[in-house]
Image (cartoon, rainbow, N blue to C red; front, side, top):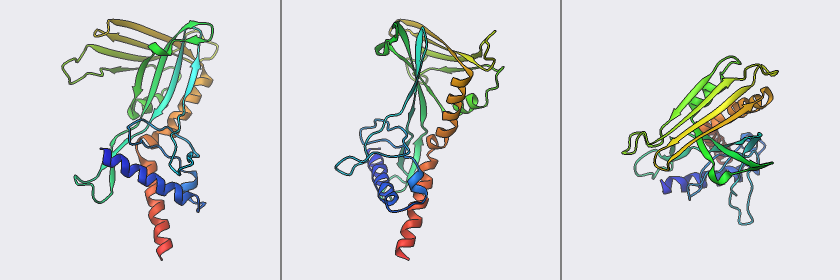
Length: 235
């Protein structure tokens, strides 16, 4: 995996170098990769370049602040690995799709939130598709067991629910509720947040935009552009 991540970083360097001399696809194609320490880099339409010429880490998130809790959403990059066991060809394939991390924190005072005790819920690409297609009168629920398939299965359970807001002036708003049961840490916790029509429209727009990147299709598109530019230069 370490070799694969190095190959991805090398690929990104080529893409950035190519974009500096071309007005084609690479100029407007954001990067979403992981660095050699497996820490996620998030999306930016303009990758930052350090003084050493390396692609800098970029963080992007958005937070909704409410009276009793806050909700932060942040994209987590997909992971790549060598196409073949040896990895000598340099070809990569996606080994894990990206996710949208939701972080919930309780309010502990006016405009103050306890992020040290946050709870997280990672939305998969399929779950994002469910939210994108959700109509104003529909509800949905997602269940996660982080230890599923392991010896501690069932000891940590998370349930995320979206339900229409009753009697709200904004008929398309929702209530977002996260329930967490952690028998290992002896935690029973719940977060409840109203989301307005405008806020859910923002979320839906962000989901639509980021979904192809979570599938790794941006890397595929960049590889096509690089090959085309290399072919033109050598022709």
